[in-house]
Every structure is written in C-alpha cells, then in structure tokens.
Image 1 (cartoon, one colour):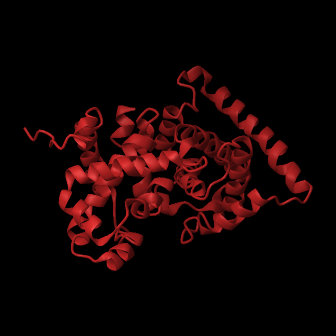
Image 2 (spheres, rainbow, N blue to C red):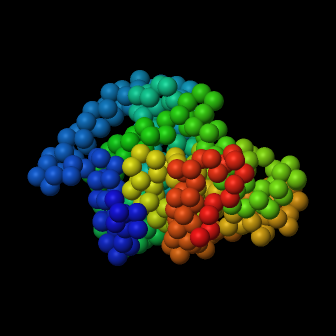
Image 3 (tube, rainbow, N blue to C red):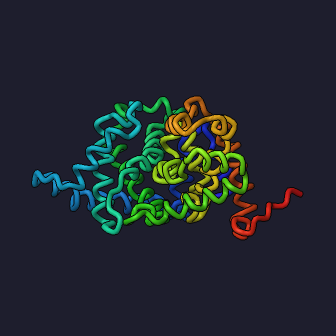
Length: 314
C-alpha cells in the first residue's frame, strides 16, 4: 500500500492493475491462490451476468433503470475513443445494471458510470500490455480479454462503492457530509478565498457537488485521475471519502488567485471547466502532498474547525 500511495510506475502498466486488485482485496495476497481466486470471481460474475442481464435482454425488457443507464453511458468521457467504443459501452451497461439490481438501497445514480472509467482503462491497458494509456485500442482486445476486464471492473467497483455507499443512497448524506467538511477546511487554510466565495454568494454545494459525486473524474485528464486513484486505493477504506475531501479542498485552493478576482458569473463558468487539460503527474503529486499535510493537521484534531484556533506552523 505504501508503494502504491507513492504511485505505480508508468513503465509497465500491468503493475498498477495488479496492485489495484491486491489493495482492493479482489486478488488474493497468497500467490498460490491468485490464479484460482481470480478464475472463481470471474466465473461468479459470468453467472451474475447470465442471471441479471442476459435473461432480461432475452425477454426484450428495458426497465426504467436500464433506460437511464443507457442515457448516461454515452456521456461518459465522450471525447475518448475507448469509452465511445460500442464494446466498452456494452460492458459498462451490463456491469452497472447488475450492480444496481444487487444494491437496491442506492441502485444506479448518475455519476457511478464515471467511477468505472479508471478501472476499465487500467485493466484494459494491462490486458493489452499497452505502453501508455493513450495508446489503448479496444479493437485489439479479444472477447476473452474484455470479459476479464468486465469482471475485474465489476468486483473492484463493488468494493469501492461499498465504502462510499451513503454517497448514493436517498439524500446522498455522505456527499452532504463531505461538502460540509470541505467547507470547513477551506475556511481554515484559505480564509480570503472563503470570504470571497461567501461575499459573491457561491454556495459550496453548487461548487463541489460534482467533485464529490464523480470523484473529480470530470475535472482532470483520466491519466491524472488514475495517479490520484493510486493513493485513494492505497488508503484503507477512506481514500474515496475522507482523503478525497482534502484533495478537493486543496484543488479549490490551487485556483484561489484566479477565483478571488472573479464575480459570481465568471467564477461559476470557470469552475465548470478548469484549465487542467494539460495536467500531468507533477500537478497530482503536488495536490497529494498538500492534501496529506492538511489531513495530518486537521483530521485527528477536529477542534480546529470550531474553536477558531490556527494550526501550528512550527
């Protein structure tokens, strides 16, 4: 986990795929059981697919849930040749429907489709032995490869969502709590920005809801998000919740010099399309380092949020 937090190497993309499977508890740690363990989970997924998806399609049904999934999937990274490919969209449709049926407390919520994208890219690149994520070509993947990617994505997504399921239940209390915490963090680390946002009437719910719901996947290039997910997955049980809040706070403060000069209209336009298209690993490393420091200062000392005292700068 410590090695993964520092970032899986980009020289061999298969390493990251294996590290994610291990850290998410999907791949057995014991080498003697890994091959048979993966095979068993992939067979189990094939059975779920036959039970919950293939039978439904055979009947010609399109329940409301499936209809909504089919609307959202084409909107998922619409500029990517990987995620506009019919085979990948079909893979996503099956996985999302099966997960939603098996998790009726939350079922499908818009945004869960985005959470599949790093998993699909990482596992597909590993299957193809690609040398870079932007070189992944779905047409080079056999049906057997795609079946393995689909099963691995489903089980790893299931684990991630099990840790943040209250993000997607009625009222989304997990997201509400994260936004409230982020607001407190920003107030502490950048009071000038906090005061400006308040003065122009920018509500933190409107500002950061998408960041929490889609885990910043719409705010930066996918390769940058994949590096961010190394750290999230390495954080046991709270990477996608607690640590993500600190990442979001630092992400907002990163743009503080620009935002503090904007009125509400310009500010809202800016946050819908941050200039991150050229971001690489260096920007993510900076974000991770700052968020780690903030979490170390604040997470075990929640009194800083309420007593008006500032953290020590010794």
